[in-house]
Image (cartoon, rainbow, N blue to C red):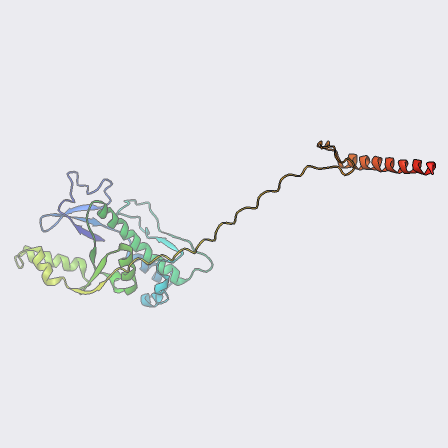
Length: 274
């Protein structure tokens, strides 16, 4: 779930964008905020590990996912195990694992789930950005925030700095803070946030990798010129300069035999003169 503050987010019809991809709510400070809500995020990882792989070792399953594998997985996951709210609003959407081969490993499946959820959250973030809202950083809490690997993937996918809070209690802590403001313990939401919202660590997005230079292309080899067509010259009919009639194989054989016979007959006649 993501929350994006924005005083101008709410429109007259209650729709923040043209397709109602994000939900607009009245904010406690008098403005409005946008909410993008996934129906299954960290629960997708729980489903894979506990129900499918039959393990509770979350950290152990992620150890095989090295840094050099991030962004290079051939397995993809759509995290719609219970339909989806933001931004597609489709109760009939279903989860999907695609790209599996005989070489697919447990680590590939785990990485696909972590990346698939991260990109689904990015879908909502991109809707907010399309409305002109700048998102360069975000606070993160909850069960998924316990995973250093998942936070790294999330920061890279969102291209935003993630601030990890000291308290893991997001909704409960927020409700208590609003109650403090309502009771007059603090004058404003900002004041109580400054008091209780403390950042424990920060995860920066990694810079875009420099694309490898393309290998220098070899100079194109010029095609060999086609040889000039050679007119067929019958060796037994030299000097005519005329293109001979195209004969079949048997006709050419018969023609040559006739010419050979004529040549021998001429020699026999010469012998009689001797």
